[in-house]
Length: 274
Image (cartoon, rainbow, N blue to C red; front, top):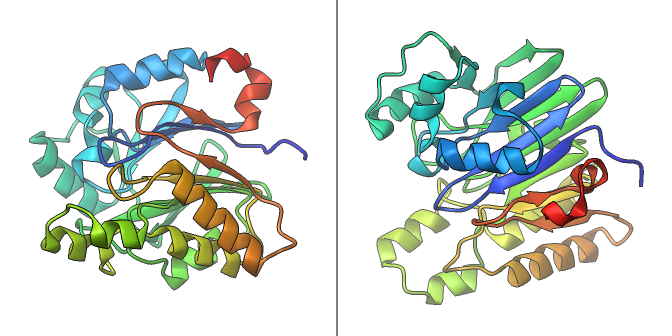
């Protein structure tokens, strides 16, 4: 398989914190800063990427597991941060921080921007913060997509993500495990709602419905209480194969506590890092 033009390393993924590093010919950037700035810096050092190499950060929404490290990052680095207007408003409340240093860029769902030769497309997700976003990054004819924290995949998200060669996709919970699990009923209803989180089978059905499926998929934002890496992978891989038997997709299951990287990183850096 020809290497992708996008090197992707999910630094952390889950309800305790999310951050993803993407590197391509136009530069390196982060999606979300939901872990401490120190932990991000340490993870990047392990990948031989200095923080100063980052060209931007793109934030999906203001929940703390996506913005925890943002105040420190904004104070320490003069690197632009993109988010929707609603996300900036919500992040100020979540982090108890006045984000007004001048490096905050507005990119609302449905809008696109060109940055360092990369076209960035934002689309709406179905979640319960103020103005959440998913992203597609275009480099020539190549695309990388990012979609987590959504109760379902809307039409605009589906159109945007169709044809992405690498995709980070939420596979949050096994529905039976969630329904039978220890969470209180209101929380179960929130997660299962249209503004909650994407179940394993819903993620699989979305993938199988695409006209042009990705070649690499990172299963992300797995619940530590209502899912396991084994269940998520078996469910998604199995359902995709049932519906699209000729498909060839490489799956990676992300972790809350460890870096998960595609083969492009392994080609560039020593395998012992992973």
